[in-house]
Image 1: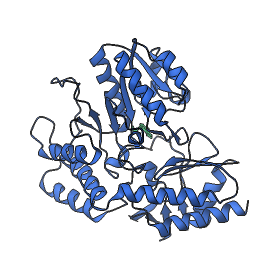
Image 2: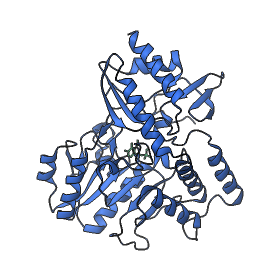
Image 3: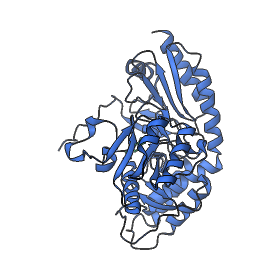
Image 4: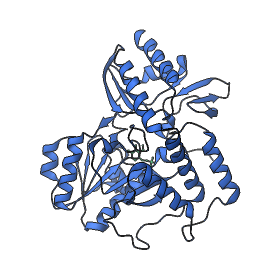
Length: 376
Ligand SMILES: Cc1ncc(COP(=O)(O)O)c(C=O)c1O
């Protein structure tokens, strides 16, 4: 049997990783500013992460959600404290798409409506409703096409006022659009969305799958706007590579047995991974560090040639170049051993490093990018 070939691959086979570095079979070391697509939050093979996961594996790895799993309560309690959402409830699942699927479902269970507002440039995952709310027709199969979804331009307040009416079930927005090319949802836009949702009974869903868990320098990117959504979805950085995701659910939603469910969600191992990540974010004060190092990188990038615009917050940075970024990413990888990310905008280079990236490693990236751009 062969693997179903859906991913374009770099010709690199990592065999070892530590912090912000990975090594290939030949022993070449690469600086990882991509984090396996924003997943590596506390750095590869962090000792506390290894400790909690291996201890847990030696005790019990899995049982279904039909028994008491106190690690889930510990995770919910620590997540509530660190994120500032103590009074919310947590539903645990396995991937970003699944989290969004459940959030949209919860919204519709709650207000019995069907119409969803999403935004141009959005990416919410590849399952049926999540992909229907994703603004990329290439990945929407005919069976996923859904007449209930309306796409509006991000940050267009007039369009939001016009469309967010009493018919709307939910509005779903990324804290910072990732795949779409690093576009931040403005504070005033999010504040207006909150107000209109309150007035109409629509549910406000923040997709923080990529921008959450400290990546923006806030625990959640939307916190720069000082609003509280009704539902917040999380995944990627939550498990530092272990598949775990969740929905933070405001107290106005009442849980009923059987309304949501999953076999694997909230397993012992998933909880151990997610608790280890929260412990490290708190102990190493990674929110402050992410803000500091992100601002430093943005400031340095401003001095480079061929850079048209820099977008983002914390360590979710989009560098808009005056030309396609693919050849530049290849040079960074082949000539300077630096991994970076791309986006749906061919000119936008995206960096999503571990939140504990050292300043000296940020400097190494800036130096490498400067060399590549100066030699174009
Ligand atoms: C904002 C956002 N939402 C949802 C998803 C889907 O997450 P997953 O691939 O874990 O299903 C992604 C993945 O890139 C994402 O960036």
